Amino acid sequence: MKLSMMINYSGDFHADVQRVVELEAAGLDVVWVPEAYSFDSVSQMGFLAAKTETIEIGSAILNVFSRTATCMAQTAAGLDHVSNGRFILGLGASGPQVIEGFHGVAYDKPMPRIRDYINVCRMTLEREKVVYDGPTVQVPLPEGEGTGMGKPLKLINHPVRSRIPIFWASLMGLSVKNTAEHADGWIPIFFDPEKFHDVWGDEIKEGTSKRDPELGPLQISAGGMVAIGDDLVGDAADAILDRSRPNVALYVGGMGSRDKNFYNAILQKYGYEEEAIAIQDHYLDGQKDTAASLVPAQMLRDTNLVGPRSYVKERLAAYSEAGVTHLSVTPAGADPVATIEELRTLLP
Image (spheres, rainbow, N blue to C red):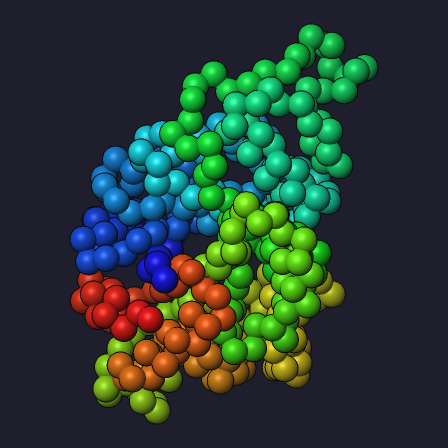
């Protein structure tokens, strides 16, 4: 199991880079770089590549609406080149609030679009001439569109790797099924290693049954906050877990409309129907603190790793049993390097 961590797009980037360098020495395997509607993550990943030596650098996520499919492949090839083969391409659809509100692009066919992007990226990285006709991507432009001067081209340079790992940050239904079928890896959210089948089990099973054996087993990047200490029981553990309440409330309550919020649906499928509805009602009414207070404590315990060494070791075994290959953690203590070093000693 690899250890990974996501940096904060609203934090101090240069301080985060220095921390990543220290964590690389402590045994961190992967750093994920988000984008949302903040600074672009590509420039940050290039900077990280220059400052590190062994750590893998992944996008989590690049959305498939703000860059063309071949541009995404060029970006992946370029980042893999400057990092000497350490890049992971994490793709996702984001949501209509960002795609339409910030990028000014119609949020149309998100699942087929990601599937098209995966196909085009792999074709481009193999240095095939890009000739592709999918439901959302047509390269070159079809006859009758544009100037008519477009012709099939292939990537000029030879990539460091022709098969860069592609992870898909999918949430529900057909997207998860297609992730299990087509992607190298999956980036879920609110992952409970013992209950995730209640939310995604059928889709993963169906997608895996159609998976090309050459892709290998589906990799999974999941985890949560981590704090290890014999004193972290009861109220002491809950005090740390409570730090994640505002973020969970933001997603469950505020990411999407009252009628369409995938994060809310996930919480409901975990069995917290009443809580999910109440969180959303209060959040959309502007009562964010109240919404955060309604996040189920048990859900926080089940989706993070906070407690004594023996407890954290048990939770790590559960993540391993669930198929998690990349444990994505956020060290919650004052010394993240020491936390990562200790966590590595507990990995199964």
